[in-house]
Structures are given as C-alpha cells and as structure tokens.
Image 1: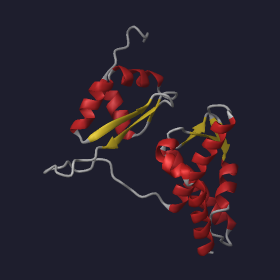
Image 2: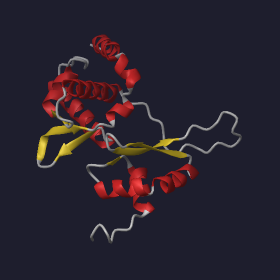
Image 3: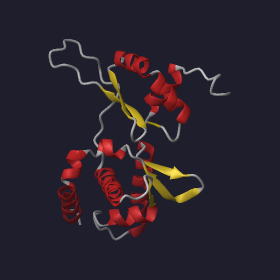
Length: 196
C-alpha cells in the first residue's frame, strides 16, 4: 500500500493505545495516523474517562485515567487500574532514569543501550543479600523482563543481551523523582541493608 492509498483509521490507534504505549520509532505509520486523527482519538477516549498524552519530541503516546472533579456526582469507574510497583521494579525504573539522565547530560547518542549484566550489577548493590546467588540472579532477570513488559525497556532485534531504555521512563520518573534521586537510592540501600 502506498502512502497515497493509506487512509488513517481510528480503530487501530485506539486498540494499540488500550493495549499499551505507542512508540513512533516502532509504529511510524500508526504514529502518523495518531497525529492526523488526534482530536478524534481524544474525543473517543474521553467518553471512557481517559486522556491522551503525547510527547512528540521523544516520540511516544499513552492513555491516562482522567481525574474526575471532586464535585462530580457520578464519576466513571477507573478503566486503568492503579497498581503500586514492587520494590525491585521501582528500583530498576529509578536506575534506568538515572542512566538516561547521565546519557543526556553527556550529549551521547539519543538511544541509550544497556546490557542485562550492567543492569544486574547496578541492582545488586541495592538488593538484600541472600546466600543463593542463582535465586538473586533469577529475581533480577524476572524484574528486567517485567520492566520490558511495562514498556520501559525494549529488546533489540537479534540481541538477547542488550536492551534499549525507552524515553517514556522520564514520564514515570519525572522531575520530582529526578530531584531526589540520591535520597531515593539511599532509601533503597537502607531497605536492602535492613532485610539482610
């Protein structure tokens, strides 16, 4: 299908967004369609109590739950469940955000690639010490896989060792988090030591 024959449709966009994050570099045609139909998509999701967030600079879009007014008599039930992140997932997200901030400040490539081993080593410092190293390694790998599922890391094609940090991590770990990185990491370190 040529670009001239392509007719943007709202359905694939909505379905993709309901399933997860839309990244420009992974779905360029769908991203183009989203920008073309942005106001229709927004009208559609608002009916379900959702809002559309787009970061055109970084190239990702996602849905968020709208916050109802306090005086609203019949607020809609939440469509997107709120789940607290576990300690290891929170820790890994903070470490990923820190890695991205370091890469940005150094003026390095816009893509930030890390190895599983590098992430594992960074997490080990903050993990409770256990005698079973295989168990710790399995736990860290499970955490990395969960963060891939959440969309904050992406596997590279034909490369099982290296992962790309997705820039949407900065939407989760925002400026407030960034401001007290060291305090949060110290908290994680204290947690790790308290559970030894």
